[in-house]
Length: 487
Image (tube, rainbow, N blue to C red; front, side, top):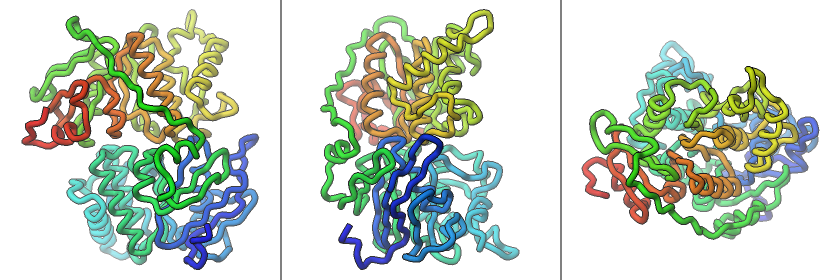
């Protein structure tokens, strides 16, 4: 870290320790951020990333260690952090759904005052959205609850980068592209580089290692609550970064399945809106939904589920399971334990005469805790005690733990670390080989390329079908835009 000497500190956490009961969330962690740099922060789920973010932004006071802003110590709270130019976009978005986009901007920027504060807020957020995401198409007069999850993420990012009276000094981005398609993610990364070149600072947390490697000036790796590596980004490759995080890099030996599609499909759907291609999936296939975000992929998954199932209530013998993409809105039960969140999809098989066999339920939870590596000392802890990525693992385990022959997945790997992703991909292929069918919407092209077939969506309908070697980023992008003659 000698190269940081002489540069203006924006925030510095030194020797920070945090414990929640028996869990050591931070164990003497150091993180210093200076003006004019983008710092990539990586590590597996539960490594301590979210905790140190909450310490830096004033949400948590360290049990041991120090936090300084601009090289000066003082009162440690959220107000102090904001007064020193610290802004944060959390993985679990924090917008008020009943307020408009402009009103949410006013909540975060109290200096938008006067009788015409609404017009000021509207101008502020429209300008910043246009700078970061040109052509975004978001009506800033709409209420947040009417926006897609991708649009909400874009709005929160824009609010944090905006400055009514002074621009922020440091913007912390926790998995900022988890709901964005490749085009929107590229726009954000380009803006981050411009912001940093103008003297701003960004702390970028992402499990998409390509974003970290291409956008960061410096990469900090955390493991078990400690900073284990802090080096210039130029010294890493994808392989060495994964290995530094503590995972083994598996060579890509993914073999697409040789599926017999001559029989009746396991799931089908006529052309959506009476336009485009029909959908069908056969037993043992992994089908990808691709295309630009917000073009009907999630809606198609919901339609498939309801057409097959009829309601959302779990019962014995259901043949279809669903992994929600927006875990905070329609995935987790926040007042329940980790175990209850995992087992609710399997209650039919765990019950007899209306009573749950708690022994079987506990065995189910422990089996999946071990198989998918849910980082918790006790499955009886509240679901919100987990990091965002570990919450997502619980939702994934909930679906796979059922006897459902068809699993619908709405971007299920959001916020999941690279090591777990590799394990989950192996589980998917093993389950598919055993006859399970997966319908997988993903905003990550690497995941789309793992599918047997891919349906590309455009304007709410299926615009193209790609099979086998046709599945590539070039063909997906070509099929995503109107007037394309791609496959």
